[in-house]
Image 1 (spheres, rainbow over the protein chains, first blue to last red):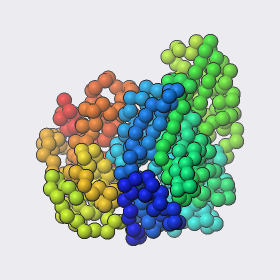
Image 2: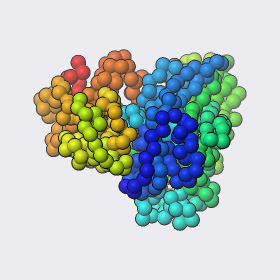
Image 3: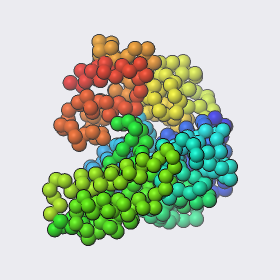
Image 4: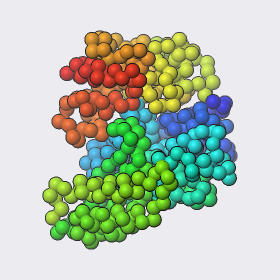
Length: 330
Length: 155
C-alpha cells in the first residue's frame, strides 16, 4: 500500500477542514472498501481522514414518523434497530443480505453509499477501465459480463453498483445530508449516484470536500416491504438481481408502490416505470408482470448477462407476490 | 494497542493493517492471513467483543480498542471443534473460533440474520449457523463439523 498521512478527526469541523484544501484526501469510516482498494492501488489518497470516532452514530425518530440515521451507524446496528425492523423491514433485510457479519460490524451507512463497483476489470490494474483511468476504455465490454449491468449502462462503462442497503434506501425515498466548510445540503438518494454516460469516474453528486453526515427516511408508505436477493450462492455474495419493494393495496387495487432494483445498474435503480404501471392497477400477477416489462423495456444486455433481464422480471413479480400472498390484498 | 488484555506499545506506519500489526509486529501468528481482502474470514478477531476482519482494518484506527485474538480465547468452542472434526488443515480455524464467539454473543443480543424470519424464534438452527458464519470460508470443507460444534456449544 502507498504511504499516506493519517488524521484522526475528533469532530465534524476538524474532518471538514482537513479535506477543504487537500484535493487528494479520503474519509475513512469502516474501511471495508477503501482499505481494500488502497491495497489494490486503485485508491491512492495522500491524506486519510479517519472519521470513525465522530459522533454520527444515532438512529432517531423524526416528528412525522420518519427516521434520521447517522452516517457512522454500523450496518449491523442499523439492521438490528427495532425502529428499522418494524417500520422499514426492507432496509433491515437488505442489510442482512449483504456482505458478512464481520463486514457489517465494521461498515458504516455513509460508506455504503460510496462503495465502489466490484467489476473485476475495475479492480484489475492491468485492464482498461474508464472508471479507474478515464478514457482508457472498458475491458468489461466484450469480456466476462455475468455480473454487469443491463439498465442505465453506457458504451463507456457497464459496471453495477454493489450495494444492497442503497437499493432499499432508493425505494424508501431516502435523503442524504452532506456537509462541507461551505455549508449543509440535502440530496435525494435517487439523485445521489450518477449514471456513467461518458464520465464513469464521476460516481456521485458529492463534491470532494463534502462529508455524508446523515440519511433521513420519511415515514414509510407502508410497513409491508420486502427485499429479495438472487445470487450465485446462498450467502455472502453480491446480487445478480435484487428487488426492494413496498406495496400498499386497497380493494384489490395497488394504492401505493415503491420499487427499486439492485445488481442490474450503475446505481441503485428506482423502478419508476414499474411504479407507474402498478399504481391503480389490480394487485394481480398480471399487473406485476406488466410493471416488470415496463421497467425492463429499456434493458440492454451483453453476451454474459442476458439472463439478468428475465431474472429481474421474475424477481420483481415474485417480490410483489410475496407482499400480497398472505391474503391482505383485499 | 490493547490486545488480549495487555497494553502493547506499537510504533507503526498508518498503512499497517491490524492483521499485520498482530502477526508481524506482536508475533501473534494465530490470526491467519487468507485472502487479505475481506473475502475469507481467516483474519477474524474481536474488537470490543465484536467480530471484524482484521485485514481490512488499519491498526491505527483501533488504537485504544480492546482486541481479542485466538491467543486470548479460552472457550468451550475450542473443545467442541476438536470433538466434531471442525477442521482439517486448520488454517481457517482461529478465524472460525473468533467468529463463532462473536456470533454467539450477537445471537444472544437478539441480532437478526437473513434467515431469522424463516426460523423459530431464539433457536440457533443449522441454517442460522450457516448464514451467520458465512463470512468464514473453509476450503477443506469441514463445514458439517463446524456447524455441529457451534450447535453443541449454543445449546
